[in-house]
Image (cartoon, rainbow, N blue to C red; front, side, top):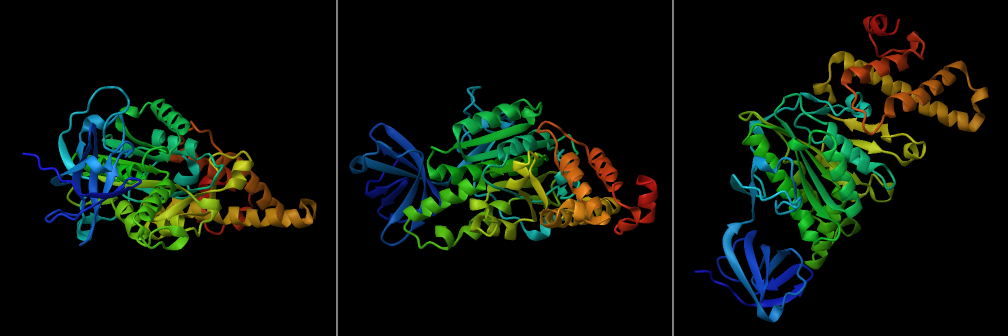
Length: 447
């Protein structure tokens, strides 16, 4: 027998204020019915005076006077299956690509599981993205969480699609889970078509949340995507890369829901618990010693006003292991991808790169930093007034941006190709200035 309760107090957006009921658990799944309209929801807050229910869907048309709620007694779960690979789904894991139903192999709580740190293995295996600025200078390691900090106007859609198309672990048993959060319809069309054209779509799952959907769906979609990724990684033995785009939309949805709950805001109006909320997402990455698979994360976020100290990139930087920074200035020069390698960082690079690769990277970094200083000097005194050493670095910087950073949005470079381009660029500089390389490096590649 199904028991339904009345007692709705008020409806505010997607938040339903309900009379408290004894025995109801936090996070429990509920079914909301008003005449012919039926929606899912979950218990978001409990107190002595009120119970707050988040409606997972559009609340339009709900009649609060005739509203009834059924409490299922279980937490919200996602049906998962390997059939979800090669499909496009919504926040609830339901297909939206009109290719038929997906038969679930099991149901898992979307909150995930807490893994004992002792069970975690240290990330150390290189993952090739096909993008030189990442593979050469900011190596992505299997099990790492490496965010991309973008700016308005940058080619973020193109970069996100290219990463999903190209990135694959070294093992054959690899998959990509792409979570598109709060994006526009035309952007969604581009991303799906671009990813589908890459040839690896059968090993890719897309979770799609559009900008006109309820804010709570954005919060749900990220956890649904990660639940499926964990299932592939830790139960099916896949090496999974999860791309989360755009986490700024996620945080804005979190702020909107917090405001509706009438919670006290913190920095920039975001809730004070945003750090722990983001940590509950980013920490769902890693390698477990007793499992064959792995879960790597690439969160992509747009920095509001290009401010890297904004709460969203600031907190993300605390939790994750580095950042890839996109720059509007490079975009305006026609450089794609517009990755500024100087503020970019991969804290686990030393574990995923060979010693020679690390020396090569250090030399490239140092030379490009001197090139940017020379560029500033040239803007003040003019290039003709500069010394020979500064002109050498200025030429290196221009060539580095044109030939190393710049590549086509369908160009998938191997690590060997990336390193070869770097060695050719270092030939532009006198050998006695390359202090970070060993003599055998110079004799092997630069003479």
